[in-house]
Image (cartoon, rainbow, N blue to C red; front, side, top):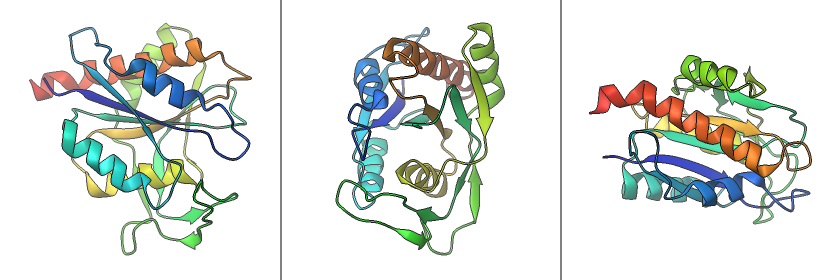
Length: 196
């Protein structure tokens, strides 16, 4: 059975403890309700390295779907990103000291690409569990948007998308982990019949 991939990011800028790093590590090796395994992995906060590391994970694990996650320092709820922009505008340098501004993620690709996660099913699951959430049409222009666009552009047939989570100061990591686990369960339940 193909696994479901959940990724997070490590520390960057003023975010000394990125909840998505903890969540990806905690979920790695766990199993969903139907026995499907979660592969959790942490991507580097590096424009040069993150896309290649994501590609390597996809090649190694051939997941049924990909749930990319990152922290939004201003968020007070889970943000289900609906689209990735083919544009980079870093407000701070990545962890390699690189700032990319006014560049495309992939030259010649579409201006924006939509999430292919089953957002309605995810929203229903979060609503039933009383998890605060909303759709967002702006994933930023930093690493989160970069890997989101890269995934959708290079693997258009693979269900995938991005979820921003609040910082640790706003949501305890256990609460956020439960929410992302729900996202994974809802994604799997919606997609699994197609992939049996």
